[in-house]
Length: 271
Image 1 (cartoon, rainbow, N blue to C red):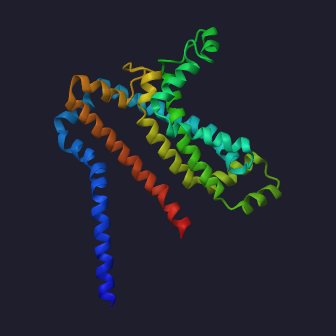
Image 2: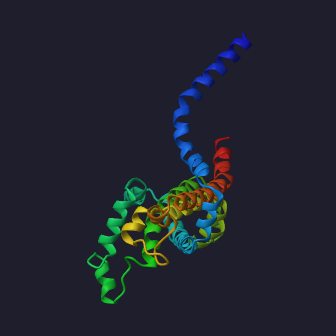
Image 3: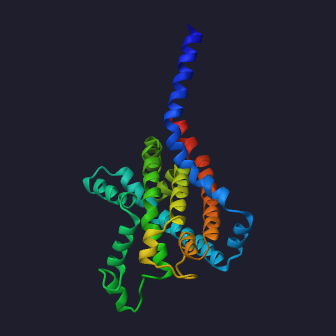
């Protein structure tokens, strides 16, 4: 009876694997195709290209600055969402998630309408002869809007799963709200926060649509790695493939960090 049950279970597993195989191939094949089609000469050409070096440096600068802004402003926002039961907080929490659903091109157009020369806030900046669109800061603003929801959502989940009794004890000991947040809440939720930061950084590095429409594609000024890949397609497909492979390698590193710091916590919580 046990052997029959074991064979039945194995056959069911094989069926599920066969059903999942088409989707698995669709997800994996693009990466395999990049790996097979990008030769070492093309990779070396891409790495030694001054445009790529400038784009990589710009991507690292903007994504790190964006990550700092997301963390600094996202922590208090996520803490408020996690602690508040008001309808206003719930509505704002839903609005913060909007960039995850809306296409990046729509976000880029929205940023242009808000901060462009004739935009709502753009006229204020124009008064001081300072414009945001098609500048270094436009890249950062686009990355923040696109990537922030990933960190805030992870932080809210991490904050809501904390032991509230420890927070109450900290209050009874006379700690201020800021001390509770920095000395109790953030250290306890650090694993979830690191996971959220990793997600946000990966999303900021890969941002394309909003950056293209709001910041442009100017080498050395607003051209990030995804935009450099887009431009390389017009010059040399092999270089574009090599750049894509390098970006995939960076994404794999971020994915490894994400699974190392974030996934184990979820598994522990389930157990």
